[in-house]
Length: 526
Figure 1 (tube, helix red, strand yellow):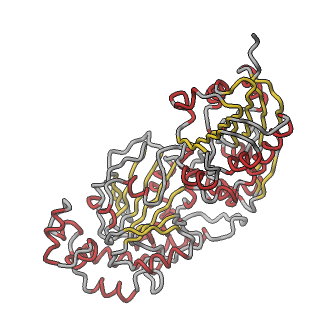
Figure 2 (tube, rainbow, N blue to C red; figure 1 turned 60 degrees about the horizontal axis):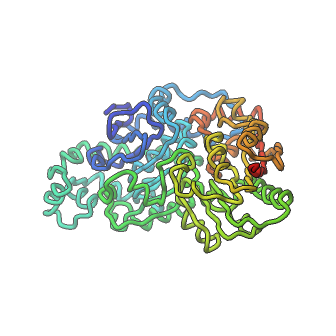
Figure 3 (cartoon, one colour; figure 1 turned 120 degrees about the vertical axis):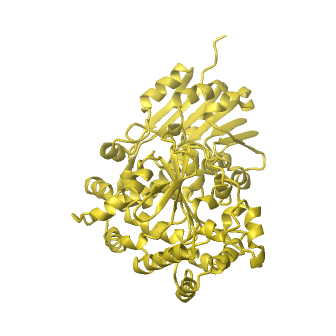
């Protein structure tokens, strides 16, 4: 546990310096880490940090309001205004904690939703979180329309009773049963030990009241992608919570639980799965989260799949391929186009994420959907099969290409065709030039040479440069997120100064280099 000047933070287990994922939880009023201690941390390579005890939040009022005000200025206006040193010293460790992880997940509970909405905007880390889940709380927190009504909150503060709070928190109607119910959950039957003394609780209630009412919610606040709403919540009205998130197109998930929703789960992964998410892979996690927005936010990939089908039909002299295997199918955009243009008897598609329900709904009834990592294909039964066409679009760059190409080449039948769309060495060069990061793209010539070394004849190979205008630097990174592409971007890249530097040099554009390869397995000489 570490005490900060505005709150405390505790880790659910010893901090792992090698962990790539951070689950940052802003707990609610009087919600100490012991109330979340039963949740197993079963997310691979993940640190779980819990923020709590907001009694000193009002100390940040003025500096935070100043920082938020500067945040909402147009990103095209270069400002020399420095963030107040008090803000920097107070929240620097939170920034560093976020920046030290490749993937960040935000979970905010109750009034912690409103705290997270304001604090994360103040430290310029809105883009750090790919997944943001609000539980039984709203960004405004205290509001006549979208939160706890100010008059109700004021009465609670004035007449606060720990036993009555426990009744509402755990959804226990009979106050006499509270002690037994708490012991049954493994907690102390002394509510003051569990939540704090009346004085401590009233201090925190007052601090949260002052913070929520004095610090305006910024226009560019964190966007909660999902909201979990308990039907038996006696603190935040479920109807009010849902109404609040309808305004932001947040996906709402209802559970049969009281305000203390954490008692409904045994692990963090189980909690996140309420949102129908998989968080056990690297790039796969981002694509699973972005699956609903991928089709309309990935125009380059759309153009690539159309060109690939055109190349296939033009250079092979027909469209009959009895056995087809597609890897990296995603949500099935390329799969559907292939099926619409080819004659086949067997069609197998693969992805690292389980998109089976989506793929089976939009593809032909005879499609076989398989979920596995292509790096593990040698251990899959399908590896023994031979295919007349193996195809993939915009996937190879995420894989160990040399290894995977060797594997799929061996799965081609004699005279079988390999159809590949990927990206070349100049892809997203703006990111690499400015920040020194990016995927390790293999150049077209090297890929062609690799195919030839595997006994494939190149029927066609080409590349092109396409500039995509996104309107602003922030628009570029929003485009990446909506299409599931994160480029392994350190969170510092999304700071205001970095975005301004990007826009000054490149405007609001990003450049893609699609590459196309069509190859045929040469017949073995007798």
